[in-house]
Image (cartoon, rainbow, N blue to C red; front, side):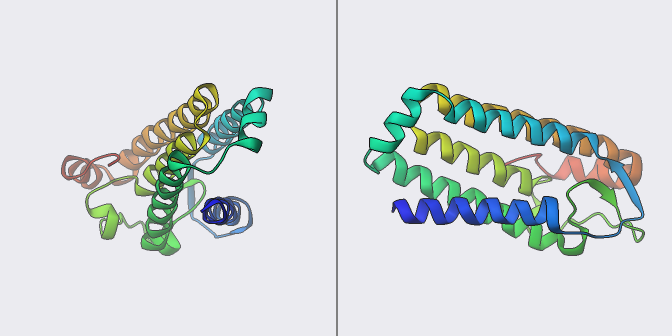
Length: 181
């Protein structure tokens, strides 16, 4: 099961690295770049603070992969799969920045039929899974709370921009859907 955990984490990080760093698309209008920077800082801060305590590293190296780690691994996997499906649903409309393409379309199918931010929801779930796997109170708090705050912030910024771009169409969409699960 330890290998499943590490394969899941590696896939998650590779997916995010590809999306955030390597994938290049052309968009007619970038609505916000600052929030991506803030999200990145909060995630890195959360990870750094989580793994920095010496007692965490000592416990992590010697701990058996028990029930909490198995459950946490499935939670991480669930979050990564949710994020992947959200990205695939958006297809060419997915971007690391908050952008609008020239053909300006509000996607409301698949996961987006019920949840406005399934990709961020997947990230939050995955980080909560890491908190369960870590089973170390300070590390679990840092690895879950800071990224969650980052994605909640990003969702609010994105929604403000989408209201400006789509107006009543996005407001009606907000009424029918939830921000997260």
